[in-house]
View 1 (tube, one colour):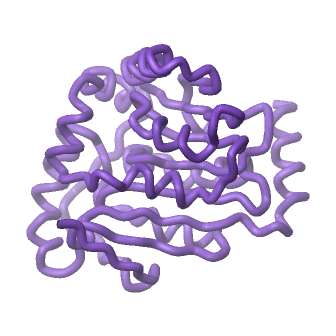
View 2: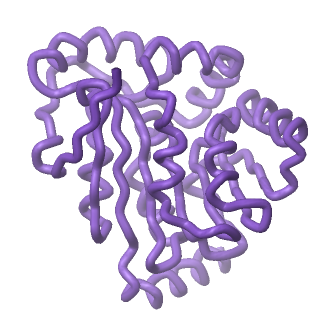
Length: 248
């Protein structure tokens, strides 16, 4: 059974514990995911990923058919079917990831599905630039794996068109006593598998930037989708930023 609650950012924040966490460099993360590429569906099952969560995250982008969207940390493309349903054949999906192994599976999926509207790039998300403003950006089970997640979020924010949304979908320790029990086990498991830092609070990071921030939690608060909109007044800031990056 899936339990869903809409919560405020302040009720979601948890104090960081004392379990030591060491963030890894981009190259280390890439190698780890190259080795795990074939096992990603197993981790969905192991962590009890709600079956509707990918479609919900795509829907929270709040885009229209024909939209341009980016998935940061797109992996093997497991969110692409949901993204295709919201952008349609006239839309475009950009995917960026550091793992060649994951992107190889994503390309195989796109070829099998005959999706001609997907463009995949292997690079650090902090260095990625699209050729056009983006209507929506999704971090799908990727934000916590990036040691420089705040930098990537800021960069994504600048690529997003005013009025567009950023959505973060991920797993986290549940609140209360259950989270206290889960956290040491989850931290150990993440350290040796997916490298998702369980101590950071992405919903707080996004709420500090976004307008109309909201968040939903599932499975006793262990899964969440949060989103926020870029204010329309940020148009000039976005233009200046993209021009500067293009000139580098």
